[in-house]
Length: 496
Image 1 (tube, rainbow, N blue to C red):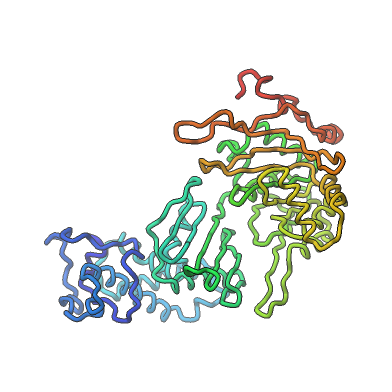
Image 2: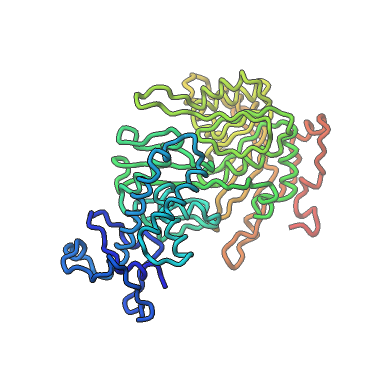
């Protein structure tokens, strides 16, 4: 017997704050579905027939919706009783999140008992979990956050939530009860990381406890109501073997990238939004030897470093008075005094790119960063533009010489039409010829392989056959890369 059927006789709340039935995963049965054997057992104080002039029917709501309203009312009463029982424990910093959740679930269990609604063990667990999600979690999106198959959650408005699975977007049935409900969840998220969102500061970048990236924007900037985007953070770090299995890179390419990191080449990971730049930066950084001191600098901490000797720095926005902001550029300058062996900048998007290039050129070899660009050539042009944003009146040739001297390798990522994310270029920055920064591709994605019946690209990155100039550095450092790594498919019989 469904939970919604068992509480059918409960009086709906009269506060006017009912949650629509679709906000819960426990839906009422369709008309005519209930049978005499499924009828709800009488509840002594609440089994009377529905009053003729209930708050719902007076507003023209169909009687079929009363079951969902009764369930919403039960949840509201349970949540209110939970706050009364927990009191100041919700704000007690000495209680861990896990302890708080355990205590709250115990109190919720007692609250549900007091409601005297006959529930099966499974129904009881579901009800307690849904109430806990509303009170301590993130409401309708809590289960989406817990679903490992979902990589991104996009709340366009309170009644429209999309998710990304396997690179494809899908509309979910999850809903917030109102814009105010969505706003409360947004405020709960940003408050946990010391950020704020209000009319004076209507947009914010933050992160969840697991490191997932959060962007929220509210009216007046968001015309259709509050909007929330969450890029989920995997609990288990993605490894180079995962990228090989997914077809993002090949084993020989992974071997080359490992050698480049050990040889302390300066590497830029380039790609558009959502192409997997941070994931690739994590994988590339995993090749850094354990004995080196690493300083990471990010707007919101996302990198999953696998080494022990790591110092993680995060930028800080301005306070309510517009003061106290600490940007990536200040952190990057400060990191130079922290005796780093490697500097990893999560993303360069402004004048800090000049400081990063100077660090790469002044003894901090082996540094890594990402940049938004659609090709290796665009990445060079993008870096030129970002350096100009530093406010220094530098001639364009001087900027290009800085880039050509500092950057050794560009890894280009592309999000394909089939939703997969692939490395499409591994490009060496060779130097300057006249006024132009010269680039040479070592690997290119093979688009000529076509598509399989499901529309997935069959190609993979293949070597161009050109021997990079940085192999001379490999030999000096005793790092051996087999010549077959750079052989074209035509030279390797049996290889595709």
